[in-house]
Length: 93
Image (tube, rainbow, N blue to C red; front, side, top):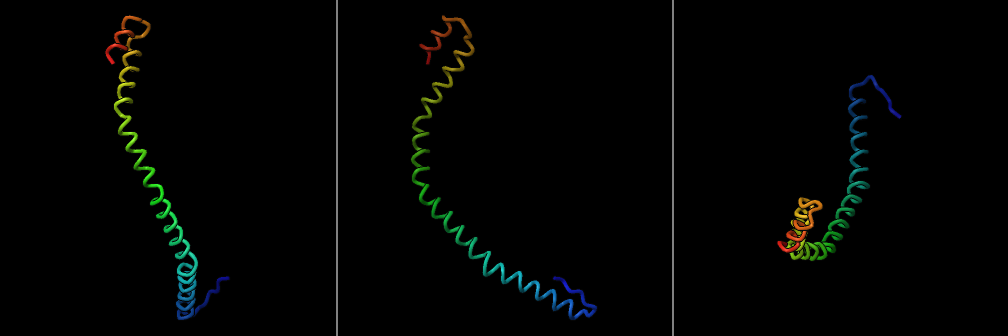
């Protein structure tokens, strides 16, 4: 409920009370919950990091095969239905 006062002092006190209530809610309810959520996210990221590193390592090891497959696919697409060109693609890559 909002009260309007004619007194400037009452308006200032009312504003200060509203700010105090908002600050109390933030520091007692909101901030601890966001801190707990951030801690849980940090913990989950630390647990997932070894798996992410291993996946990145496997990707780097597989990259030459992926590049070869991409080049072969592009060559076959360029060859169309010409079997001689397709055979040349297979022997080239």
